[in-house]
Image 1 (spheres, protein in one colour):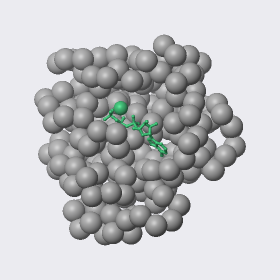
Image 2 (cartoon, rainbow, N blue to C red):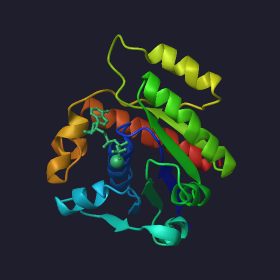
Image 3 (cartoon, rainbow, N blue to C red):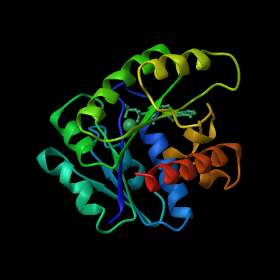
Length: 207
Ligand SMILES: Nc1ncnc2c1ncn2[C@@H]1O[C@H](COP(=O)(O)OP(=O)(O)OP(=O)(O)O)[C@@H](O)[C@H]1O
Ligand SMILES: [Mg+2]
């Protein structure tokens, strides 16, 4: 039975789909079979797959009352199932969180993202599913990253040590169905994703 990881964050544009696609590539390249489940209304994962997608990454769509269990069903086939969740708090999101082994919460180090993170952490706690915050789009210098970390910890968040920087490579390839790995296999961006992948593997192993 594989692991189900939900990517959830009520603040739009925090990086759910971007983090999911890059981590999917990292797991695939590490030899794991990866299934992607699109529960988000924009169907971004589906569009990415239709634009080319990565060979070996299976993208499935699910909506409505079955979607909580669809992740579990897919975990019978794949080592890792990554679920792109809808942003709004809904019974669909609750079901997805409940049926996951881990919730990953991408969060940019800004006030709006940090405030929205509190809500999804509460939902994960109510679903009794462990959650980790993945800091995304972290500026190389300046910004409010240190303050964001303090606020998140005060809100009870467990933050991954690995972070994704604010990099063109994370967005440039998506339009034609690629990720940063397709632009350059070894880059600062792909090293950041790989570090996050290894850290999340340790979290999963300790569950
Ligand atoms: N680390 C990053 N560096 C640069 N650009 C990024 C990064 N993460 C995300 N982006 C860009 O920010 C935008 C929003 O990211 P994304 O679509 O992944 O967010 P989302 O949480 O899935 O949004 P939605 O709530 O609309 O589903 C996209 O244009 C994406 O390319
Ligand atoms: Mg998205």
